[in-house]
Image (cartoon, rainbow, N blue to C red):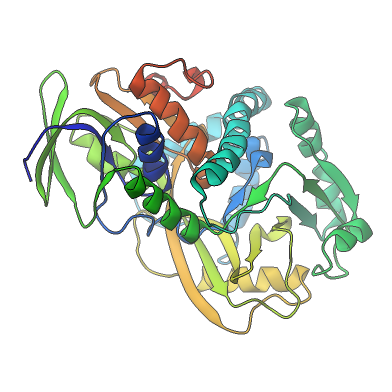
Length: 417
């Protein structure tokens, strides 16, 4: 498919690639999107669909290394590193460990917050403007605890969020159960995040795909990238559909970014963080508010059409197996907090790889070495939350407009890209 030269080619048909394509089309650009499988069928398909500005605090913080080492001794813990020699992962973990300081914690929280706030407001505006039917609700999220000591030690969280002007309410156990009656009597306290929201991610992806096509975007599915042609600029991408040339390229390949970037002599410091979920029909006593079950690190979300348990973080490379121990841990963890933890029927058991940067910030902006290549990757566990903000920001950069917010904290230059 050599054909005519395209205006903008977006590489990757996940939530970030679709959002970038849609915002570029809305800005008047011509867009062709390439996806090696089906759009929206990979990482963001089976997550819990929460929109969480409340997740502004980074994963790297004081105490995280000690907690991670304790979890390594438990096969069903929320965090796992598969035993194998992986030099790239070791380097990533060492850099992550160096970020576990309070000064970095506060810096990154302050840098992430504007992007998350923009993501929340831009997403709601996009859903309304494009009439995206994705079961979007703005009823907040609730983090709950069963361990009184763990709850007491979490007082840094409301302090950190209030410092960046994110609302949060501290609740005792009775208030948590009054807010969400699906919780059982073991709950001792929690935090309600009123600015958070949720949607059904597979519906969101399907609706983004529809909107891209409705705006005249070209989507090439089952189109695998096999290489690139470049000189001072990126001239074309080689695919199983043939060579495709364009003026501009947007690199939105998520967890697959490092391998493909190496063909462009770029070293993107992303590790695939494997997450799991189980989707059920709705249980008899079904939560309305999305829940984070803190000690077990399990997320619970319900929609009118289903109910999902999800989370965990597993560094196992690109292992494509469903780890039964990880799935069973989701069920056991939910049973400790909920009156009715599982639905009558299992609809889907799922895994996906999150593109994790060690500083917990996405990589957004022009590539210094390839001036017509814009990177939009590394969103970690917040791809859905950041999708609209990323699409808007990438469209601003590609179109030469004043960005909606300062992109400097997310610039590829921090990784010499």
